[in-house]
Length: 467
Image 1 (spheres, rainbow, N blue to C red):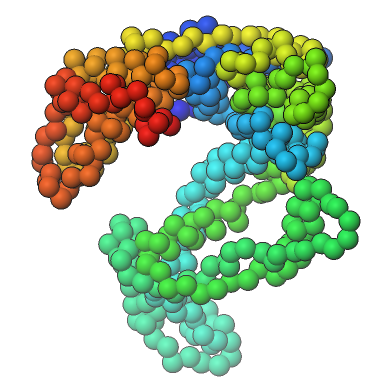
Image 2: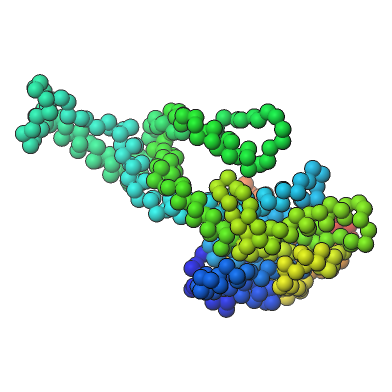
C-alpha cells in the first residue's frame, strides 16, 4: 500500500484515506498536508531543512470516530515507521520519568523491522538459491572428486590414482538436478529432512548492584550475547517448513545490519509518526496541585522535551526527535485542551475536531470502506464455502440500531457496529459448518435484523453488550 512521498499529493492522500475512513474531511486534510510537508522539507535547500519542523496535530473527538485509524493508515500510505502509545499508561503506579522515551525506542524498533524486511526482500533470490543448495545437500549429498581422481579434463589432483568412475559423478549430478527441480516445484515439500538451525534465545543476564536503565541493560545483553558462540540444533522438519526457516536465516546473513541501523534511524527521524492517544487523561486542572494531577502534569513535562525535539538513546543508536511527527488525540469529555500545560499546547499547533458519527455515516461504514465489517464477515464465511449477502434495507436497519444504541448509552462510535454485527451473526457462525454446510447461502434481510436485534434496542440494561 505504501507509495513514494513524491507521488502523493494532498488530494491523493485524502482519496486513499477515503477508502478506509468515512467522513472527517477536516482531519484528513490536515494529516495529508502534514505528510506532504515532509517531502517538501526533504526537498528544500539543505540549510533550511534543519529549520523546518513538523506541525504536530491534536485530534479532538469521541472514541470510535476514526482518530487512530487516520494516523495508522497515513503511516501505511507513506511507508513510515509508526507507533501508538496510551498517554495514560505513564500515570500508572511505578511511573518513572524516562519511561516516556520508550515510545521513541518503539518507533526505532518498528523502523528497524521495516528496513530489515525491505533489505531481505532485495536479497530474497540469492537467499532462496542458498536454501535450495542446503536442502539439496541434505537430500543428495554431492559426490566430491577424491584425491588422485582423473576428471574429464585430464587433470589430476594427486599422485595417487582413483578408481571412482566418471559415471558415478555424472549420476550423482543428474540425480541432484532432478531433485533440485522437485524442490523448486514443491513436489516433495511433504518429505522430512534434518536441518541445522540457530537455537532461539540468548542467555538470561542478571545484573547485580545499583539501578540500571533499559538502554544500558539492552546494550549489556546484546554485547554478551554477541560474545557467546552461535549455537545450532538439529531439527527434523518437512522440506516446505525448511524452506521457510532457512530462507529467514540465509536472508539475514546477506543483510548488513550496520547499514540497516543507519537507514532505520534516518527513516525514523525524517518519516516517523508517534500517535499519543488519550492525551486528555493527563490534562488535569492546575488549580489544585494534589492527587493524581501532580502525576499528570509530571507526565506532560516529561513528554514536552521529546515533542519539542531531543536526542534519545536506543540500542541501535541515538535518534533525534526534531522532525518526528507527533499526532495526539483525546475525547476531552471532562478536560479541555486548554488544561494541558501551555508549553505542550504550543507544540500541537494544528487542532482538528472530529465529528460524532451520524446514522448516515454508519450506513456508509457498512458499505463503502475496503475493510468494511460486511466484507470481513463475507470473507470469513467464504472460507467455509458459505455465501453471505446483505440486503440494502438490512444495512440501513443495522446502521439505525447502532446509532440509536450509541445515542442512548455510552457512545463508542463505529465500534458499536462490531457489537451489533456480532449479535446478529453469532448463531450463524456457531452453526457453520455443523448444521449449515458448504455451498449454503445466508441472506441477511431487514426482517432478520429486526427479529434478532429487537431485544437489544428495547433492553435498557445493555451492560452485557457494551464493549
